[in-house]
Amino acid sequence: MAAPDDAPAAKLRAKERFVVHTLSGYKIEGVSVGGQETCIVLPQLRLAFDSGRCPQRCVYADTMCLSHTHMDHVGGAGFYIATRSLISLPPPTILMPASRTVAFAAFVDAMKALDGSDMPHDAVGMEPFSKPAGYGGLTDGIEPAISSRGYRSRTTTRDARETHADGRIDSASVVSAEEGAASASKVRHEHRVSKRLTIRAFATTHPVPSQGYVAYGTKEKLKAEFIGSSASEIKALKARGVEITTTVEVPEVAFTGDTTIDWVDRATGCRGSANQSGEENGASVDGASVDAVAADALRARLLICECTFVDDRCSAEDARRYGHTHIDDLVARADAFRETGAILLIHFSARYKAEEVREALAARLPEALKAKVTPMLEGFG
Ligand SMILES: [Zn+2]
Ligand SMILES: [Zn+2]
Image 1: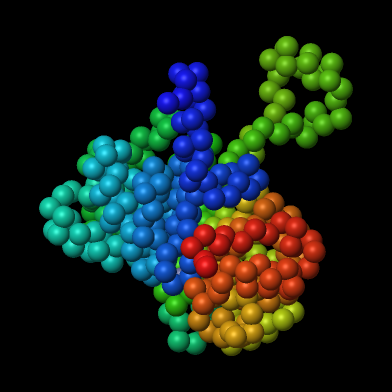
Image 2: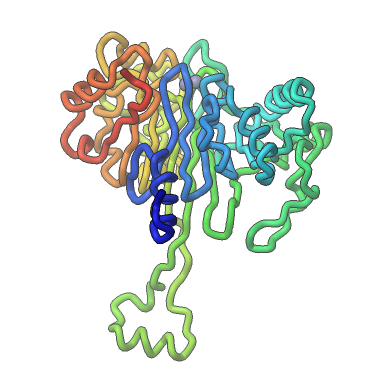
C-alpha cells in the first residue's frame, strides 16, 4: 500500500492511465475505429466529441458534440446520458446537427421507455456558424447536410432557463418540440460552455447531416495602441488603471467528424490539386466564400481529423463517394495545415493494421505535415 504522501500522485497516475495521447498540452482519451466506434474525450475541457459506444471515461465529459448520427458515433449516447444520471452527475449538454434533434429525441424516448428512467439531458440543435455562399450541397446520392429546422428537446430536469457560468440567462434554451418546429430561429449558431469556452460548428460533407466543431478559448492581447511600449511604460499604465489588453478568441480544438476533404477547400477558398471531382456537387469554392469556422479549424492548436483510408485499396475518389477522407486528400492540401498545431488523425478503416497505417503515413505525408501528425491507433492490431 502506498504511503499517505504518495496518495495524490498515485491518484493522478490512475487517472493518467486512460490518456492515449497528449498533444498541444491537451490530454486525449478515447478510441476511434472507422465503422466501429469513435469517441474522443478531452478531460481538461470536460468535452467529448461523439459517443462511440460510450467508453466509461466519456461519462465525465459535461458536454458532448455529435458530428452526425451514424451508429459508430452516436450509438453510446443513451449509455452516456443514463450513466451520468446513475452516478449523480448533472445532465449533459449534447450538441448535434439541428436537423437531427427530432430523431435524437425519438431515439432517447425509446431508451427512456426501455430503461424506465428520465435520462435527463439538454439536446442542442446547432447549425454551422457561417455557411459560405457557394456551398450548395453534396455529391450525388448524399443527402444535404444542413436543414434550417431544429429544436431543443424537453428532456431536461433543469429549470427551463439556462444560467451560464457568467450569470447570463438564456431564456431561449429549452423549447418544446412544438415550439421548436414553429420557430426555426431558436436554432443556435454557437454554444457557450463557459466564459472561456465557446463552441461553433462548421459544415462537413457526409451521407447524413453532419458538421464539425471548433472549441474557442480566450486570451488577453495587448491593445494595438500599446504595442511597442516598454515594460516600464506598461507598468505605469497598469498602475494608472488603464486597460491595456483586450480579450480575443483563439481556436483551441477542432473536430471534423466523418467528412470528405471538402471542408478544407471551403476553409481555404481553393480546391486541392489531387481531387477535382468535387465539381460535380455544384459548389463553387472561391475566395469570396470562405468558411470562417472551418478556417479556424485549420488554425486550431489541436485538430482532430478523420482519415479513413490510407492506401490504394480505396482510392481518393472512392473515399469521396463514401463521404470520407483519404490520406492523398490531405497530402494534396498539405499547405492548408501550415498554421495548424498538432493533428490527430482518427477513424482509420478497420481493414488496416496499425503498422500499415504508420507505414502509409511515413511514406506519403510530406515532412512538414508528418511532423505534426499523430495517428490514433488504439484498437488496431
Ligand atoms: Zn464513422
Ligand atoms: Zn459516418
